[in-house]
Length: 362
Image (cartoon, rainbow, N blue to C red; front, top):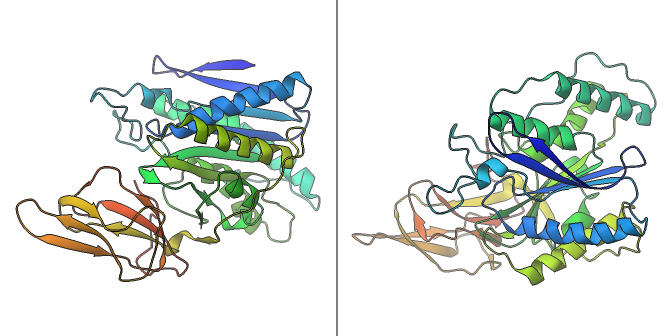
């Protein structure tokens, strides 16, 4: 079934594809394109929707599955520069994937010794809090609508992409290794763990209230009832039908393995180990200039290895070296840097003293 929602304050509408039926079991929510210039996930969910429609026709969807292949119609309309500039909202300068509502602030809750009852109570309180909110502008309405759709789901996957990258995943430590099958489904080459990454992105707005509430109510059984993660499906502009079909099949098998869809599923082997987000080195340029990479995407580097050279066409060359041992899983697609620009990401295993505060790229 297809549902559409108006976004007050804008001419845009949000489209949601639903499979199965609400209230008949667990709920899964998958969205793509929250950063509207990150395209691979949109195609993956389109293909996955076809698989789910076939399963639904056979009566093979258990519970409710919602797909939002284009979660940011506001960003998709930002084409003034002849490119979609869908990461930052042009009117406010805000990142579309930051500043979601904190649903851990629920006031007094009547909780007890039964975990399932506590989950039901907390979800009802979250729903009531969302219903009481009065968003004002279009961006606030979009954030509110997406969180309303996802907050009561058992599984929330937010599909993104990086400038030039291998598939990777961001997820909370409390959800690992429970989320290993999800990382394996997209053949992730890095899994980055963080309880607080900074800026309150969408996946943390769905997942972190559960571990915050568990900390605030010691002695009471409050499970991490929402497994939410950000999946980076590859490079921003890599709209490859064959690869998207493989990733959609991987997600379908994951949903089968978790009992959302009938089928044997199967669990591919994960080819990397999970590491702390504080151990991920961001390779930043201190100077402006052209970026000449000396290491290929996916290469394993050692601390001190030359990763890139920044070349000033009118002056000096500056070497950028690895801060840690690890895998170069992301680079920047535009080979030009300025002071502070992140031009590479290395998934290491040892937390770095430099990695404090906001751990994500803006």
